[in-house]
Image (cartoon, rainbow, N blue to C red; front, side, top):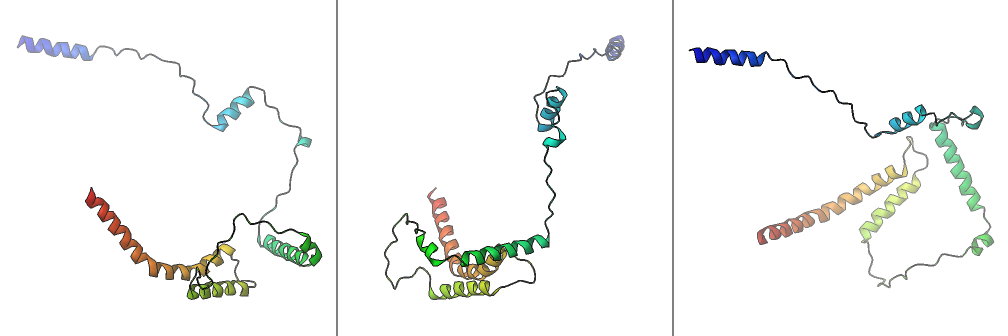
Length: 178
């Protein structure tokens, strides 16, 4: 019994011993990680001075808005009219660029596109040329997406099942070979 009491006293006395004082270390200097740190250090060192107010050129703020688009359209129309007014003699003086590669000879009956595809593309570009001033502003990219969507759908309907079938078959063969 005395042994038990002695061990309990020993444990209690160990618990009441003061904890060792933590050593305080100086923080290590960290490398500058952001532009703000570098700027702050540069400004605080006195190496940076503000430029005189006359050296800073202030440009007026130009806000984008619908009026800018109208000006752009007007500017494009002026440029187009100016290009149309170039005399044919000046155009003839400009040398046509040389082709880097010779065009390949192909059979006149062999066409890269089917008649249906050519008709679809022709119709799409016809719709594009018929568009004068849309009621809502659209970009050329939006128009192209709208026109290409039906052609892409047709292509996917015709080719996607066979393509997926072929890829799945190839993957099954690869897995079974190990």
